[in-house]
Image (cartoon, rainbow, N blue to C red; front, side, top):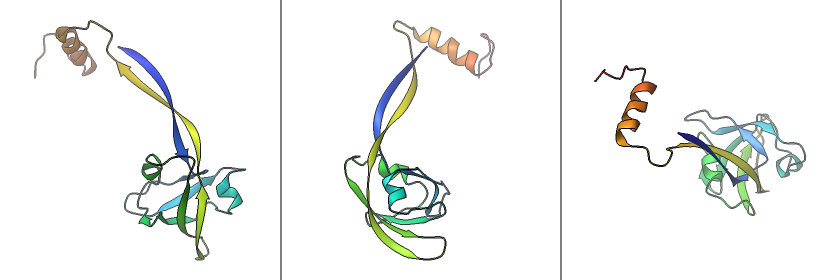
Length: 127
C-alpha cells in the first residue's frame, strides 16, 4: 500500500465549533483577524441557524457544501442570552487529505493476506 496526499480547499467561517450530537453548535475558538472576530463572535456563542437551517451537531458539514467566496447568514445567541443575526463572509482554507491506495498489480490473494495480517490472524487461520 502507498499513502497518497491530496490538498483541497474548503469554506471556512473563521471559528471552530464543538461537536455535541443533538445540540446546537457552540463556538469553541475564534481565529484572530477573521471576519468572525470582526463581527464579535466569541467562544461560548451558540449557532442556532445557518442560512435558515438549524445547526445541530457540526457546522462543518454545512460548510463543506459551500463556496468559500460567499457569506453565510447566522442566527447566534451569546453566553449572556442576547440573540442576533449576521452575515458572515466565508473564506477558504487548505485541507490535507491522506489516503491509502493499493500499489499497481496487487493480486486478490495478496490483498487477502494483507487483510488477515492487519486483523492479527495467522496465514492459515480462517473465520
